[in-house]
Image (spheres, rainbow, N blue to C red):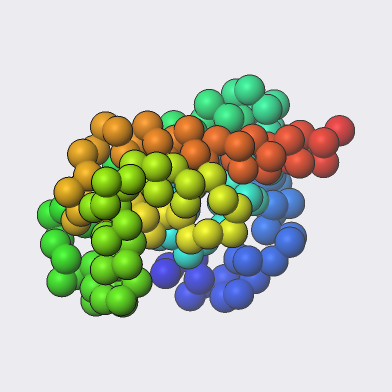
Length: 170
């Protein structure tokens, strides 16, 4: 919310990746921590796009190390979201994200195929993925299987973003 209020809709522009890269270049010594931190913030806030962060990660560190940094941030962000939802409860999640949307995700995650559903939601580009972490936190789903499914599911799209950033850098 702070970033959106400070920078407005410009945070969603195509120039955001170039701005992130410039900032990381100025702060090269701590760039890896910034990538992880930005990725955590992106997952927890779940309205910010992750692609500019991943572009910058691969541009600065290459695809392999960029993936490692991005996935570490995504796992930490997913963990925070999951346990934050568990701590705040269903009513808070309904307030933040809307009761209908949360109940639908919760229904899918509590079904016999909940883990498969979580994996597919993370796998399909364009689906609001990070909201699922909050819904999983208030569902019957166990944390470890969920975080593994989320990490594997988000990896192809993340790698795609990292490759675009790498090729942009070349």
